[in-house]
Length: 147
Image (cartoon, rainbow, N blue to C red; front, side, top):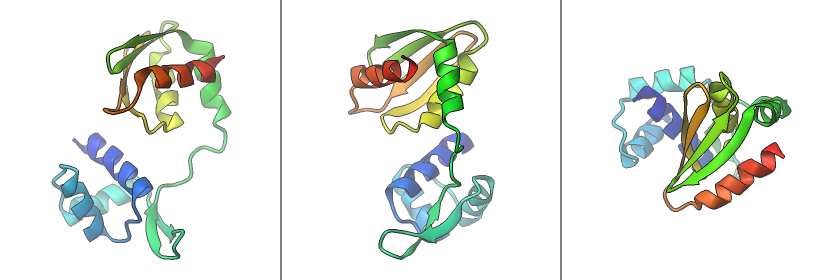
């Protein structure tokens, strides 16, 4: 539940200008997550969220900057993915043995808003596509990354 809540918090702060813990609790509640202010306070610390000026000049929570070297994630994908198979609402990604978790982490770092998340085994990744998103478009984007 904590991992899902953390993912939702990151999604919410990207989408909305959330300035207080109380606001974040309310947004989480609207998203189906029950959390207390104390829980949200711990989540903020664990996610290393900070406050910064938004476009309107108001202060809002922001996530720490991602790795300044995203090419290493692309390299993992290029070196490990062997096949991408489209299924209904799901993309199955085959990798060389032992590389699925690293490739799934790379896909997670990709931060594509159409990807709900990935589950990895030894050489297979199940990549869930968000409802309303086109799985074939996500598949094409993934293929473009590894070419």
